[in-house]
Image (cartoon, rainbow, N blue to C red; front, side, top):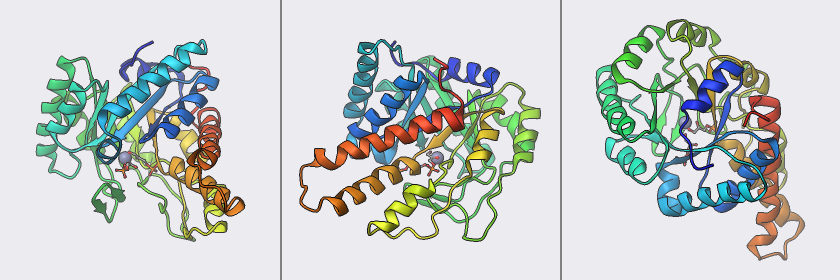
Length: 314
Ligand code: G3H
Ligand code: 13P
Ligand code: ZN
């Protein structure tokens, strides 16, 4: 198996009532933890790279690491379908560079522009991407939270009345919508009841039957890891994510891709903090990165089985 696009994955996920996990990657241990989980669970995967991650690790390193993961899976007898996806591409040039460099899917996030400009930019990326056999995700509506350097204070929920025009004019393959999820580890205020606008998702689905929907900002901000971070010297009081039942409900619907980054960060950081607290003399990175990688693997395995429903779907 070589790299795949999201086309076939989304078709099967839509029909099968499950979602594909789209996990953000930026180093070897994260890639290994996620792919080891997917190999054991026989789950298709999207590995996504933000522009910040691409700057940090460099395009070529990430591509080679992901290719190595596919080969490693094959050596274990598993044909692991992986789509390599640009997360939150903000310019045509960035999308083009990722497509030219072998990514099989890109997101063009024109959600900060006017509706007309978003259509124009997204269409330009779709034309280039489709000519090279690459799939494209667009976005309508804005999530609260932090994406690279952009801090969006409030949600601007997706307007269902815009989705048909956006999809038909741009030709995108999937659409990210804003229904109350947000980026980062602080998605709700303490005491606030977590809520998602499933009514908007339903309206969007009515207007776009059979069309794959994407949820960003969908980490659960797993309480055990938040507690571990705080116990071992971190300061993340009030970190709150999307309850797993809500994600399960979304995964059964038209939502075919669920984005997860913060839970990976938390699993890794909590485990490293605990390791140092218990082993203050350790200074070989392999000593603390080994349990950190295992924590990612265990966390991802749980998500694939209990939340996304994509275990055994290769
Ligand atoms: O949506 C944002 C992702 O969590 C990526 O975050 O831009 O800090 O790599 P990053
Ligand atoms: P989280 O911050 O909830 O993990 O969301 C990640 C994301 O949407 C990446 O695009
Ligand atoms: Zn996102």
